[in-house]
Length: 517
Ligand code: TAP
Image (cartoon, rainbow, N blue to C red; front, side, top):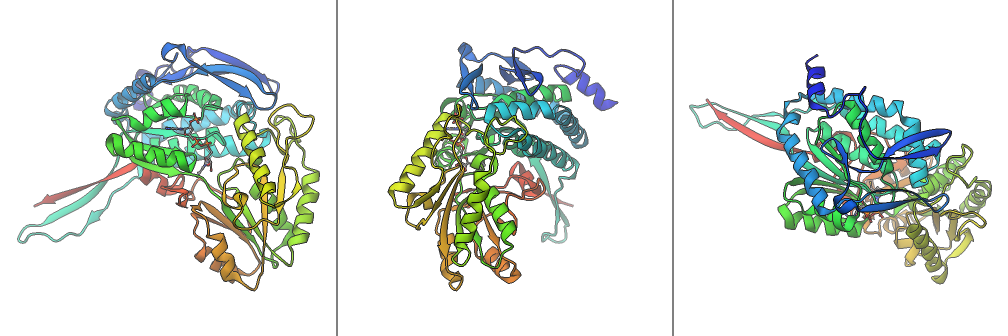
């Protein structure tokens, strides 16, 4: 009852009141869904400074869906001030268990609205609806539930230090929230990237503002509406669609933001890290690009290797940070593996992502599609063999790109080294008698996000896990992530983890207290 009293006082709108916002009505999937189109600052939907807007394009038909407010640096400052006041005001009064309850309320609301959220995600980002429901939205809900459970389990230690005799001494640590956190996310899993970061951040007791990717901010705005209905006090969560170069940059530069959680490309990650250092030395965690190797030994279960090898590349139309950027297939099964991949590709259903039979939807936006076409041109120019795709899907409007396979790829080629972030399978051969040189080739990249191996020999698999320089290793499976398992890269794929207990620590600071008695 204390919680209910607080929430009635503290929240901008209880669940039975009408929340006021300008909205766009999305008519899709036999539904009519109201999606807010303004910035969400201090518990209210408001216009951006100077009524600036972003055009949101539906990647399935290339038509403008709606316009949403586009935040400026001034808008970012307003959101930071709100988050700052909330952190030192109402949010501090909430107990960890109450915090966890709010997060559970939010997860319940997301669950109740999951078809709406998945429909928005599908239309806005081109994600296939069935996948959006299970992964984009399903794993988001799980993240909120998982981290809700941590709220009242964040503990310090007592530490046996040397006392100055005859006195005694007690030293203990406290894990404290950092303060206002800025979150900046990419466009491949809009709601899931938001949830992975924000659930850990909020569970740790911080307040935050998020700048989602400019191409697809609609689920983030629908999510903002749900946070009000769940009872979050104003200012704890702020959502500001906008451009990276101004709103995103303003978050990284802000003096009152004490932590920045970033997921995106390696070049922007490096730039952001400099801004974090120059502004106020804010802590940052960076989940960046990848070029993950997947090794398929001849002694694998071939059915499994083909199935997971396909999804390691084509899952979420290749817009998957842990996508296998390079497949190394043992020479003895190389031709058979390709034959089976091509057979499956020829029957892959490409089309409207809302159609339940569709497996492969449009790429997220036009610039990305153009980048993929250029990537394939480089592959062909360098002498790789294009055995499937490499072009737009003929006769389909929208940013549809044909799933693609390159073989005869050598280590020095551009396509062997650079991330495509699209549905492009890059296959190279290796000899099973020289595992040392295979490992050297697999590690010859500045990225270190994920990796995978298919073999029935447990010794080979564990030796691969020992030697590969990557934050995630999959054995006889791929893309098997879980909200309880830490996720993040090595080398230039960044540092700091999302998910699992380790993610909480990214949003906590340790205070050490020493008492002499
Ligand atoms: P980026 O271009 O790096 O953009 C990521 C986010 O940063 C966007 O919200 C972007 O805003 C913003 N941004 C751009 N310039 C900024 C600046 N100067 N200051 C602050 N923010 C700025 O990446 P992307 O193209 O959206 O995403 C693809 C990349 O993300 C790939 O490399 C992929 O591997 C990586 N990724 C990694 C992971 C993990 S977990 N490691 C997960 C998903 C994606 P705009 O929307 O305006 O560009």
